[in-house]
Length: 101
Image 1 (tube, rainbow, N blue to C red):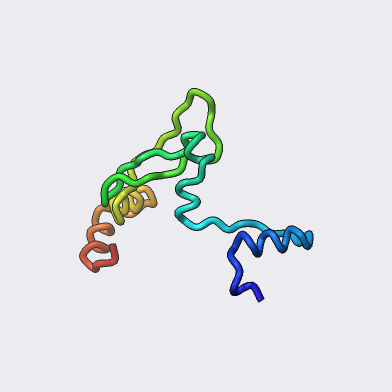
Image 2: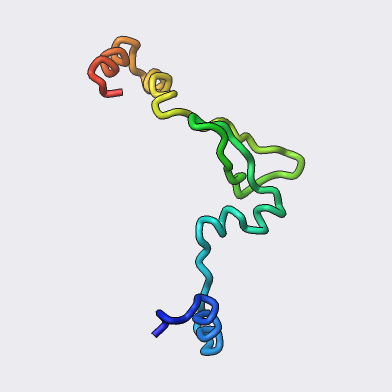
């Protein structure tokens, strides 16, 4: 029934019939949304593959720039986390030798 109609035509028909409807953004629509652009919600952050765009946290404070740290590489913090969890250097070395980490 709707296969020959555009999204705009379908939306118009549903609205005329007073049926709730909403537009589903594509990824491109999301990235380029005017509200995100106008409110300057995007920041560039470093990552193992270069700079990428990242959205600011939903809650921000006036005159305070939130931390937008680099994205860590896979496994970058594994040993530090294991040590924080109580693993000894020997246990971490054993896990590495077994290719578990």
